[in-house]
Length: 45
Image (cartoon, rainbow, N blue to C red; front, side, top):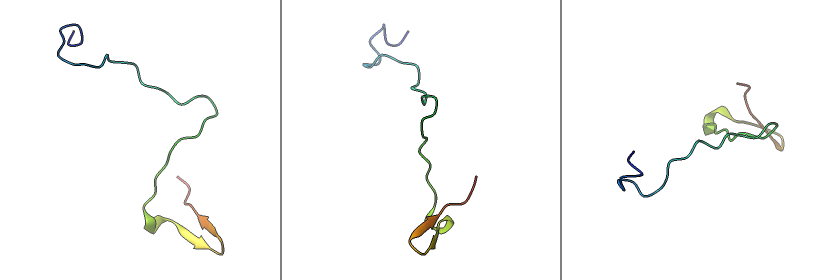
């Protein structure tokens, strides 16, 4: 393996998955958001 041979410095790890009931980060372009009064409306996916 590359780690054992010293080709990479950090040991490979499995990905960190979101915990059950946790929130996910979502990004929207500015044009997709709508401002109504004091609230920002986000379209459904």
